[in-house]
Amino acid sequence: MQFSEGNICHIYNRGNYKQQVFFNTENYLHFLVLCNKYLSPAGDILAWCLMPNHFHFLIHVNEKSLTPIHNSPLPVSTFSFGFRMLLSSYTKAINKSTDRHGNLFQQRTKSKWVNIPGSNYAETAFHYIHQNPLKAGLVDRMEEWQFSSFQDYCNLRNGKLCNKAIAKQKLNINWGDFLKESYAVIDEEAIRDIF
Image 1: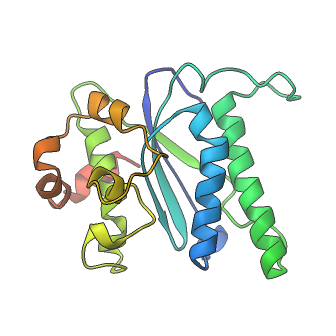
Image 2: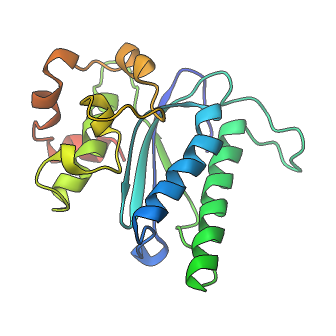
């Protein structure tokens, strides 16, 4: 993944062969602990959602994200290193607890810049990420899914993973009418633009 300071990126990956990657509440919570350990120091997380077989992040790249890791044999940024550590640490934990071997996630984590001038890609990605559990039929209301940042933005939880101040500064969202805007149907063409 190549990053530029100030950009906003939609990052996502799914289970190898579309397999499940989160099997119980403890798995979701462990992944979030690892996110806090490896991703939070390396970029501003604006939104996130963990689904049974995949995940999404909306990340604002800051100056810390681009700091090179000096003890790495290849040049790598702090953020790329953090993401690699997140996925490998989580995979090792799942493999150990389920007595399995091999890759849990697809080899290449995907990313797309979404803060393109004149577009609303970043805002679309933000809402799309939060709508995932609803569209998948896992909940009747987005507020019910505890494994996304939506509850934080609705003030139902005081989560620390997202940098809500940066999100409110960088995203063109009507925060006064957040719930209504969040539930608006996203056009399929707009969804294609964020992938």
